[in-house]
Length: 108
Image (cartoon, rainbow, N blue to C red; front, side, top):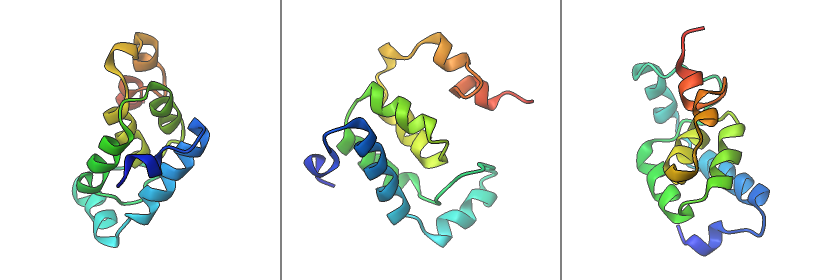
């Protein structure tokens, strides 16, 4: 996907475009694989990493976009967020928060 086509003017527009792209790549086969792989996300489209990696590469590094994608709660959006975030800008607070990467994997 062309990087320019993924760069609307605002982060919110970019989040919406990314979600629409993820939804367009959803397949029943990938949705079925979630159970097979033990993925128990409450919100997921059913998109393979094969489709998420090129999307993330086209988006490039963007901390604000990553934060916005994470906040959507969609599994694939969070995967893309992890790929596009700027590691040096991720704080301990983000990692430890209830919705953060480490906080979301803790047993409740």
